[in-house]
Image (cartoon, rainbow over all chains, first blue to last red; front, side, top):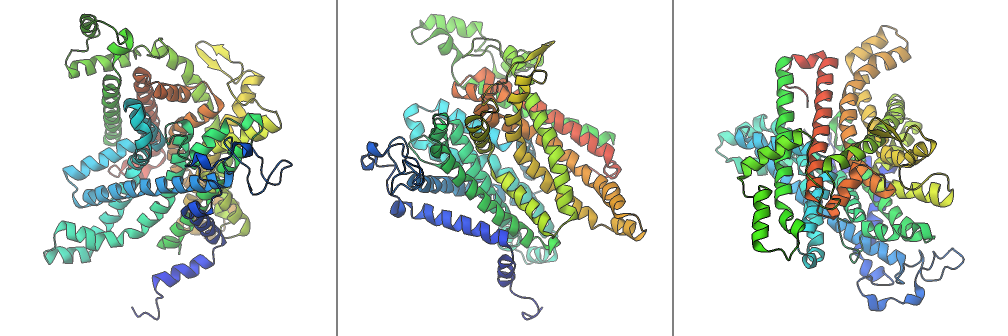
Length: 304
Length: 326
């Protein structure tokens, strides 16, 4: 029980983290891409949202190490003369933002519904978990495609470009809430049967207070792991939706839209238009997954 | 065991009912068939006549029952963009997708199982660590990126494999197969690989996790204590119990392969159900969208049901518990 015998959880995790090369690598990748995305407006050579800043004379330049490469365009330029590296920084920014918002939505919704289902095993709980079961039988990406695709085709075209970002967030977020609901319900059911919850109930605390102040803090570890791994899913999902043409419009550079526009030039020799954004996407997802994977093992008491 | 089976079948029926209601609402709400058939300049009385003839004024419940009745008889209406019966389109496309998905599943089992066993048995060593890291990379590459990289390497650079289409197919009594021609097989290699890579990684990770769990159990320690040869313990005792959850996941994976086939089919222009779905989604072709949803749901629930029942057969503990399957 004393502090001396049991190190604080924070320092325990840090020590474990420093001993895992994969986790450090993943964190480094995520941090550097994240910083690049955060400071994209200051780092970028050309602003993809400002067409006046582009010079068509610089278009379709290969990367700097190729014969026709030109400084300062490290990774070459696109068909309109925009710097590839700047596009990728802005694209990572959009992709990360969509991913984080989507996870926020699915985590918030799933946690709330999971807690309700854990507390109320009756009708509400049954309906929530049956809905989750039904949604589980359908792959998330098909649902996201359906939500994104139908909204696009039923909304008036001039509105679609404006709402495409919230649409993608909604499509990805709504397609993944059952994962959180199932996880939170399972963990909360275990907590619910413990003595401290019984004590809180006996002292007259209401359901919502117990769920928020007693149960939620105790199920936060598995949620953290799922959030991390889900960011990877959401970033991949955004890219997939945008690549298929049901995500963000080409005017909004995300990693998915960059790959979509670049893919058209793969056969005409301008490989850097697709290979670099694709590599950035892979790097980002690998980084998130390496870190999330380590976090899962580190927080799982079974594997300690 | 009987109650468990009834429960599973009941659950599958509920899922199918919910999906069919959604598919029906979709086909009824999205787009206006009268406008798309008659055009904008039609007279109001013509519209009214067509509405009557198509039965669009009937009560929703009646129309839903009719929709379900038609679907059971394999009639899904006429595609708005192709002007052909949806059933014919599906009949052409389903074999392509199934051949792709099964090939990818086979590939993921043949590679994922050994890698997972290896990573579990050599847990903590450097080579298992590398295998594990490779699987993280495997699950991190989206299918369409793998597909693009494969096309870049093997079609654009090396020119070895075709980058689109299904090659020549042979018609076997209504089922067009690409397995029997060399161009068909060559066309299958890259889409199946792109589809399989993520699943290989997922399966390997699952097998590893399950096997580590099993290797820790008492009966494995007991088997070692009995002096059995380690390979007998590992492959006969441990692997057999690892395989139970693997069956479930392979079934679910087949569903996911069916879903992710959408992406691979678009990149490789593979003429399957996924490409049909994306084209229909782009053109708001409601009869096709709802038919694909129904067929996918049917495929999913059937696979899940078979897997659940297999699970009960393989693991006798379950038939005594009450609904113990996850």
